[in-house]
Image (cartoon, rainbow, N blue to C red; front, side):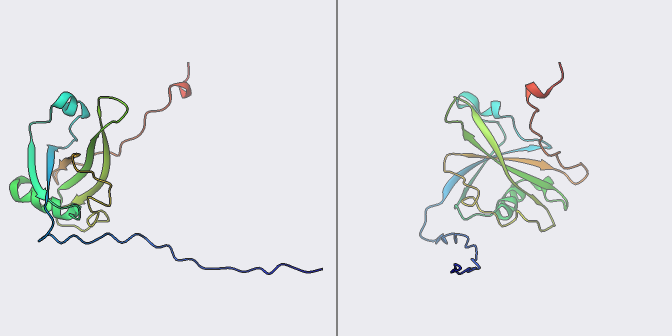
Length: 159
């Protein structure tokens, strides 16, 4: 009786390395940013070719980090410079199956503190040129926005 040999291998997970962008040679993109205090703008605000009124236009590159974008917002919005101010980032993009927009949260930064989302880049969060960036800004004297919870399914409710 012959036994088959058992072999084990350790495989290192390799994350794809982001290509570095030469900002001297690469044309920047126009990033349309919409900020609101204490909440995200409604996806309905983006319907039928409309956008919220509070627009900030930033020329940047796909390798821009959330920390870098936080700094740019703070430059033009002095009241957001206070330590402890939270910036909750979301991408607003068109829904391909209906004539509406969808929103996907991509990370949170905080003035004066380092966080796990600081170094996320636009390309890493699958931002596509033409999408919008929506930022909920929460001042330090307020609680950060609660985490969104999905609505329970209708058939799970008691009758």
